[in-house]
Image (cartoon, rainbow, N blue to C red; front, side, top):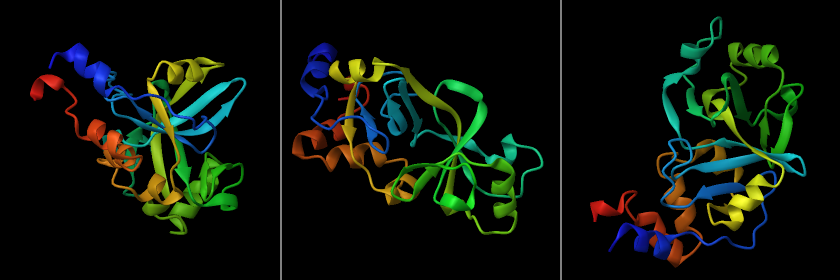
Length: 198
């Protein structure tokens, strides 16, 4: 099977789920971008002005203490959130109103909030590593850009539970979420990233 034919056969076809805050994006199987290849992105904002999301399954080989000085000792991993604003740290958490300024995404998932309060809650062990995920950078789209990419079958929109956002095995979440959508997606999920491996 040639590469181009494989791409045509196994390309994700967009569904009827509309992108909105709290939904996830699953990249089509052959996207080669280092950030977006087989990415799962939680949309934290989606409106007429554009879209913002964080990549859930691109862990970096560092912890938050490797990135931020004077931070409480905290064994939390850091993920690559996307190619935008990579000099800043972003975070998803389940602490809700405990962190002033937090933005509700969906269910028990929030993002951002007062960083000094966050450090205090971590220092006092109110927030534990299971309650929060840190990201370097974010993923962003200008007005209409994401809808255009979805119509070109670059992304499949899906629903996700808050448990999976914080607790799922991030190394398999792309495959598992695709497979959960039905038999044809199971085929895509098991197809090698490089068709020449077959």
